[in-house]
Length: 158
Image (cartoon, rainbow, N blue to C red; front, side, top):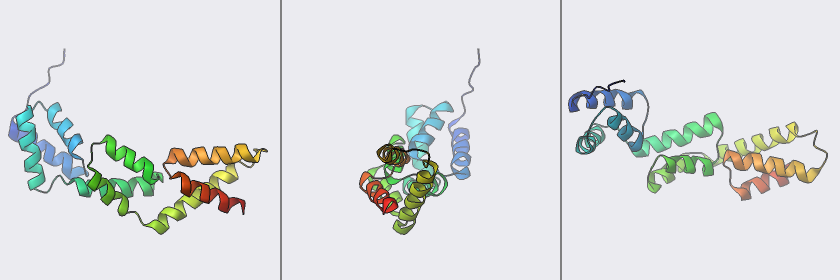
């Protein structure tokens, strides 16, 4: 049986500082980490407050970094980013800030590029309707908005 050592409040807070300094974190991730370090509910609340006061934890900064990173690296659309941030219990205000940080021209350019690349991969598909459906499904899965997807498909077929 593995016994988990329980850290003092100060030791756990120090570990949480390192955890937050390594990369941006949302409140729920840090809260989970503090519980895993053996802190009780009251201590977790105090530790979170301390981390926010010291600038280690900032949910708005996290949302902007998360949205930008997922868009640049994984080429996710706004719908998927918003869903993932909600899963992490990020506030609506911070989600809006994060999504607003993505440049509209870049967003449109990436969507068009994804659509064109996928369309080229589907060249073996004879039925145009099946081809359009596969492209649409792919872009929906990436998290792009249905109206933007339809616009991109129309542009490819023109």
